[in-house]
Length: 487
Ligand SMILES: [Zn+2]
Image 1 (cartoon, rainbow, N blue to C red):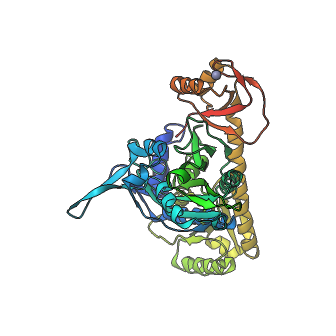
Image 2 (cartoon, rainbow, N blue to C red):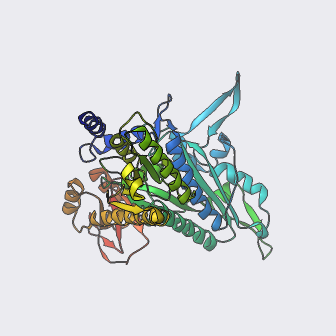
Image 3 (tube, protein in one colour):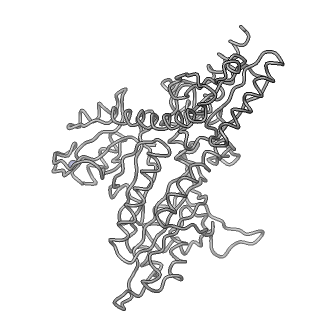
């Protein structure tokens, strides 16, 4: 028994505490839970099967929401001719420092460089100009799931990698109002996806001029708070106005017979959401995955000592599996190299929402033991009730994770009215978001960023407007904005 205890303890000791070194904890969790690994090219990442299954589950749920709002999927090429990218000046200037170029094909030097897509507005805009002729062709509501590449200097697994996976929606509309409605609709789809499926609370809002997407008229984002109080921009939705329509000549004949430029939007979320799930829910024992997206929802740990006990337990586990009838994603850990205690830790580290223990005594009593990952609450469940109770507990974990994260977000979001207080709060132990007044002047925004490293995350869409004085210059402000340090 003593041997087993030390086996169990050493395993837990290996993981750095969140409070000791948050960034190290984050990386260790990813590597130990086998979500991802480093690739040979700096800044690139290998998404391992456990991490990829998590992504597939997220993708499936979001894809259903995107389709339910009338969009369809398509695929556009990875390579974009330089001349296309260069057409929208602000757009190309925004992306130029991080574009990877293909200059050679086989042994031939290319006449024109090809960009590995950092985003697809240019190539899609060019195709739309071919496809759209009349108001009857509108709206165009296309989404694509793909990889993109941005040559980042400082990278971090899932949060900022040179190549990442995402979806990018690109829509075309007849009017400015329709495009604006679409932009906000998709921001709403993202908010609901994060809140309901990922159990991650978000603040939807508009980006300032300085923080908006290069080439967009207006950018909206959803901002989430990580476990260390820093902000993560979790998704963006852009009203592109007519900028791209003008440079790519996307025109249509309107109902009145006149030729007009179309109005566009684009919106995206990426594998960085996996980083958000890790940081919002995880604890000192590792990951905690929301049941709706967890690759494994229930880890079954059979417990036995003697061979005849193993058989009894195996029969019982098979009955449990039949009773659950494929309604939950379940993994039975029959590995006989490790102790049950070691396995408890292993599946906790991997964030499986529920653990089911089945030992000889449980078989005799016709029951299982269920333990929640989030609060470790333990209960005996009679065989006849396993299906109903498991489903119910998964739903409880899902909603409790959201409540816990929401309470954290609220407790770390403070109203501040002076610059002294602003700076003090950012340096404090309980740092998070600051709701402060801002006069709309980019100079104030820039100075605050330079002096405190805090940026305006968004001008929130929800909540009431309130007049006040800019936290830096005292100028007139119509509403509070969300400041924070970000990833
Ligand atoms: Zn000001």
